[in-house]
Amino acid sequence: MDPEITRALSQTNFTAWDWGIVAVYLSISVVIGLKVKKYVGSMADYVTAGRGVGAALGVATMTGTEMGLVTVMYSAQKGFIGGFAAFHIALIAGAMTLLVGLTGFIVFGLRKHEVLTIPEFYERRFGKRVRVLGGVMLALGGILNMGLFLKVGSMFIVGITGLSSDGRALPMVMTVLLILVLVYTVLGGMISVIITDYIQFVVLAVGILVATGLAIANLGWNTIFEVVATEMGEKGFNPLVADSAFGLEYVIWMAFLGMVGCAIWPTAVARALAMDSVKSLKKQYIWSSVSFLIRFIVPYFWGICAFVFIMTKAPDLAPLFLEAGEEAAPLSNLYAMPVFMGRILPAGLIGIISAAMIAAFMSTHDSYLLCWSSVITQDIVAPLRKTEMTPKARIKLTRILIVGIGLYILYWGLCYSGGEDVWDYMAITGAIYFTGAFSVLCGGLYWRRASSTGAFLALLSGLVAVFGLAPVQDLLGISIPGARFGIASIVLACLTMVIGSLVFPDRPGMHDVAKTAEEGGDA
Image: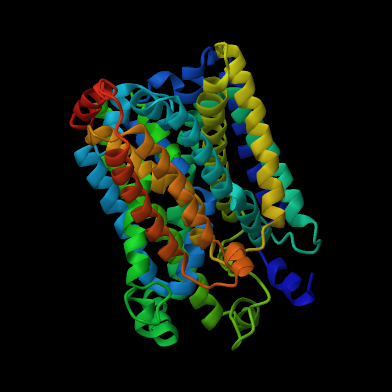
């Protein structure tokens, strides 16, 4: 590792006491996983916690999952690059979550059917082949989507603790954290996830407030706005300015992602399916709209503060994080926020904040690992088997898959070399699943003439999103914004759903479930 980079990352207030705080917290999480194992008796217990989650706990666990460390990191990266203009993503996410809570769009219908996964609804509405393809697309997009989670979260820990003197620090941290997450997720399933999410929600909320207050006190409220205005100009405040990091096309893409993130994305829907009633589900979404807003705005602000800190108080970091003409910065700007936090937070407090961030890291990973593994078990393997799988066999396979997916994200995080921002990478990989899922769920819940062929073709159309990934574009020699491919895949999925359904209608009698689905969606 370059000596300048090593020196920059090593200047932190993190001490042995802080390591102790983190160790105690992580130990508590593992113990919880061991304790709740005895309450897992069925696949419903393992995947949805027996559908016994109330509104207050539902809000806490949804926030704990969605406010993951990867969220903090990619949001801080957007704030560092785009300034206050990045706030439009947070405003859209909050508004869309509130809208879903008020209308019940998609989630109410799924909860009424008491399915364990989204592809399970596909089978009830369109048949087994759509369920299996839906499970494959969901697993493909979802597992690719979380491919960088482990690496990005570990970069935070390396940056804030100063573990930079050895080039092996990052893979070592990735391995240790993965083992911890696997232990209590494999043992406890959704019960373990929800209990630890609640604890992490409390720790995280306190940590966020304290860290934000210290950042403002260190830099000065007026200084933050003045530096962004001076260094970034109007593009630091307006996402629609021509030379901003965003643009109109990007804002439209974010509007769709805001809706997807709460109504279609499986980890959020998993919380909806675990609620004890539709009434609690509605409350969960209405209140979670505030947390969805905050989970973006606060990390954006931290990224902005990191930029201001470098420009005003740590000019030695500027050559490491900021591009010089055509030359790329030698150090990923993902490290900017944790390095900033490592320098302004005092010893002791930095341990608490780090524990909160690691809590967020674990909260996201446990939910995602459980989600994708259960989809493969419930929606790909089980439907293709000629004999019925016992609950014990399903849980065993799900646990094996959790470990397998964990090993994949360790490998992918170390090998992937795409040049896009982490948030944009996640948006495009997620689109492989959710663009098709959006049209299929809308058609299945609200259009009686939607057919299985139309649904099958719509799911396949999500593969168009792959062309938005940087390595794929480099291979093809093209350079087109990922948002454009995302929007194109949405349009294509909707068109194929409609045209496929009209040209290849299902035989009479296959839509009996549609009426029930529509009633569920209107509840």
